[in-house]
Image (cartoon, rainbow, N blue to C red):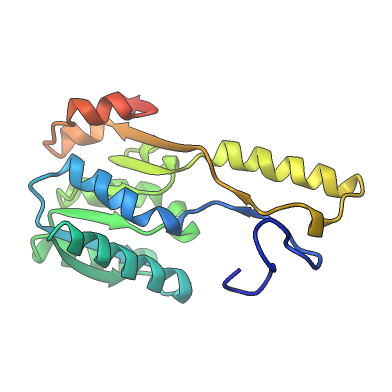
Length: 206
């Protein structure tokens, strides 16, 4: 709606509908889970991609607000290349960052292995939006179930191909979220995952 693509969620109007993955909207929840995992953390890092300025600004703003509500400090950095990701981790480490919040971003997801390696190298617990990070060694992810949302996308595509007008299809909102914890990564970082968090996890990778 902010981009003016649809009139409203229930009745998009025009010739556009879609699926909202709610990636940016989960910032406060993800910050809370990261704080639960690393309760002693007082300095949070936030990494955003300036190539998507609208998302970067929204994520940085919401992360700062969430941190302030927990009375924690926030250091925001930007990265849009592999080299800048390495530089950001080095900067966070020098600044004594206790935990890192990585913004949802397709480029970041494509560099998930790099993130996992750098997080361990610099001993910085990090939270991500996509389970793809946890599957390659990232510590923790919380976000929309992409499998569920892709199923929704396929369903909508089939309905449109059968003649349903996009204007008559409400914009689908994510309703299934998943918390994935990689205990091997936690051990590499010297972290003990709280039992309450393990109990809530949809998947624990050993």
